[in-house]
Image (cartoon, rainbow over all chains, first blue to last red; front, side, top):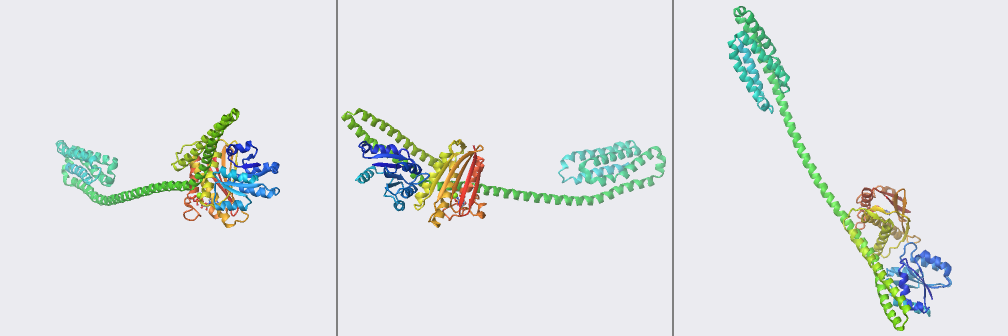
Length: 125
Length: 433
Ligand SMILES: Nc1ncnc2c1ncn2[C@@H]1O[C@H](COP(=O)(O)OP(=O)(O)OP(=O)(O)O)[C@@H](O)[C@H]1O
Ligand SMILES: [Mg+2]
């Protein structure tokens, strides 16, 4: 399963790679990364068919995660990728806004990787 | 008969001396007057030995000298008419003396007649004295009035000096109050910052926690691999571990830096200019301002755009001062877009942009928002201290006036405003590089 992680913090990348070390080794998951919404859209242009899941931060300079979400929902109807939004602000207002913009799930920082792992495993089936 | 001439000379000195009794000039002339009086009193008996004729001529000489001396001295100017009144007497003295020497018989024959011009001249002097005395009295009145005026002037001067000192004290008090206001404005903006700072610290702390946790897992895995004998994999894990530790250090320092920055912001400005990366400074405060507002008001949302010029030179500035300026500009901008967002939610995309560029040996920082703009009639006032259109508690109106002081007075820079009502506002700071 190919997962695109969108976050402006570069260190998110080694973190995911290590947290999912076993899964990556067993070829359960494959991760790709984008540092901004714009980069993510460029990436999608080429590989949207491979991508199953997008994990995106909301607060990013430039294009925000919500804007990215809207663009993805607008541009890629089939097959619709699963999009999970991540934010430091876990309030209802934010959650509702994300969900109504078409997010499949909503996670708050600091990320609970075990919970995320469970959710991803669920998706596999 | 020479006694009249000596008498006149003596009277002259005595009278003038008397008028000097209460004058500040007295110490200067007193010895001179006494000497003159003594000299005249002595001259009379001595010269009388030489006979009335010579004695009269000497007396005429003394009178002439006294008048000449008196007219020359600035201090005796008021006595000019009185002194000049002696001319006939002097003339009479010389004529009488000479006649007495040359024609002694003639004179003794007409002794009584010769007395007439002497007495007449003498009386003339006395008459002039009376007249000039009146004049002197008037002069005295004037000088009294002058003294009164002087006293009034001195009084008023003292009053004014007092007032000036009071004003000075008030001014100092005002300045102290202003200093306090600046301090509390700083504290207020620190309050706005803390939420942003908390958020900014949260990120690196998350990394510290995450990398620590994952490292613990990795160590277990490494043990497993070693037990399995997969040395290669164990080494790979060891390398990851090393990277993780350096990331933990990096993010720890990042949090540290943010806390230090916060402390620096709250401290009184050091006023020390140091080469500063404007892009970094602007980015830091942009995020802090945004997250600060976000934390306070959850409904608030805005697009943050940055256009940072590359190859921007470092600029010599007081970072926490310019940081406060940026913070205020950002807060103003976010406030403006938030207001507009409240008014028309549909289709409005609140956006705040910060751009930097280097041009003509200057660095420009532009903060633009697509909020409600500044009405034309208000534009002139926004830099004034305490001018605010925000409700009490939300703005002190000191932000821009402090910003102006910091940029224009502290950094030789400029603040320009462009705005169109209902459309946008754009503040541009330029600082010489
Ligand atoms: N970006 C902007 N858009 C619209 N109006 C603005 C903007 N920036 C400033 N103003 C106007 O200028 C006024 C003065 O701004 P200033 O920053 O000096 O004080 P304040 O923001 O009201 O209060 P403070 O900054 O002290 O909390 C504001 O009240 C507002 O009317
Ligand atoms: Mg302000």
